[in-house]
Length: 209
Image: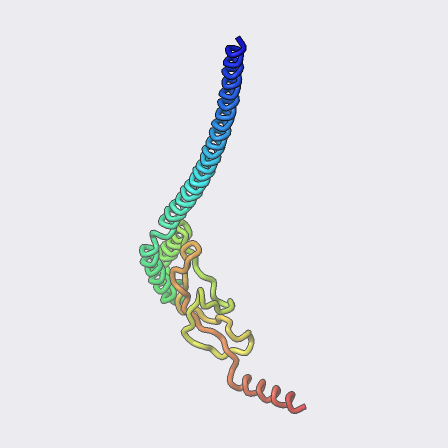
């Protein structure tokens, strides 16, 4: 009997040890699984952030492309007629030359008055067309010389205005919207040699004092 009880105690003890070992094994497995799940969750988070970043970049690139396309389309509409515009401003030049070649005496002649009036109407119609398609004449006379808009063809001695002032327009200039179509050909004022000599003498006297 005692021997049977001894065997039972040993068996019970062994069973308790097995249960404890299984619990420890299960806890270890749970810890390992938990670590694995944490790693997977972290990777998923990183992938999600990466996809968000890619999406934002794609949206930004699409927006930039849309803006570029709109600008290109707008520029094509605004400046695509540049070559045509250069041709018609030459026509405008010819009309203005024809008008300026008619003297006041001829203008007063009733026999050709209708022709002169017709030429004036053509000139007005041409300028209206210019404005409609965005061609604008550059203001030059009495303006300060601007190399972005004007091309100096000569210097003219003139003491009653600042040097560099445009005092003569040989050929008018034009812009197409905000771009230069043709610079104005102009004459620019400069001080006369006599005036420059007087100024130099005055400065020399001042320096001596």
